[in-house]
Length: 262
Image (cartoon, rainbow, N blue to C red; front, side, top):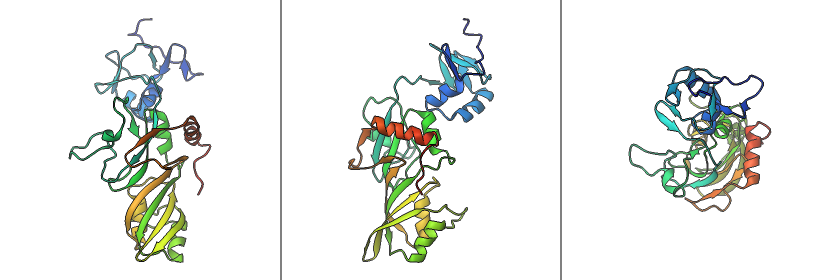
C-alpha cells in the first residue's frame, strides 16, 4: 500500500491487523491522552513519514515514522511500570531550568523513557509511579476515577474533634472546597502530631493547604500509597518494578472498576 495514502480505520474496531489508530499510538507512547491527541491531530501538529495528518481515523502502520511538532515519537516496545521512593529536595520533572535535582537522576541507567504519573512537591517524599504507558497514566490522573492517595503528615499541634470533622466533610480552601478526606491520627507528641490522610483529588499542595486552613502547618509529608501501590519498605531514592499483580490492580483502577475507598 502506498504510505502516502493513509487508510481510514474501520469504524467497528479500534485497531486492525495492519495498524493502530494514531490517537491510541500517541497515548501509548506517553505523549498525551487519546482525547488530547485528537486535538493535536486536528491542529496539524502530527506527521507520519513527514506528511501532516489531520484525519482522526488514520492508522499507523508498521515501519511508519511519527513526529509531533518535529519531535520523533518512538513506538512502545515494552511496557515499564516502576515505583520510585521520591526524596525531599527532588523535582518531579525530567529536567529543571534552575538546575535542581530531578527524578531522572534516581532512575536506572539506560532505562527507556518513562514519565511520572502526576507529581509530588519538591518538599514531599514518597510513592511516585513511573511508566511509559501514557494511556494508563492519563486515566489514573483523570478526576473521573478519583484514585485514592494516602499521605503521612507530621503537623504542628494536635487535631481537635472539630478539625477531624472538617477534614471528613471537606475543608474550604482559597479556590474551592476540598473534598472530604479519610483521617487517622497515628500519634500525638508534645507540639506535633502524626496523621494519615487519604484524599482522592490531586490539586496543587492540597494536603498542606488543608492542614494550614485548620491552623496546623505541615512539617513533613510522605505519600504512603497511590491507589493499590504502597511504599512498603522501599528505601528513599530507590526504585522497584511493579509486580504483575500490582499492574493488574492499576489497570482495574484505570478502567474505573476500583480506586476509591473513602
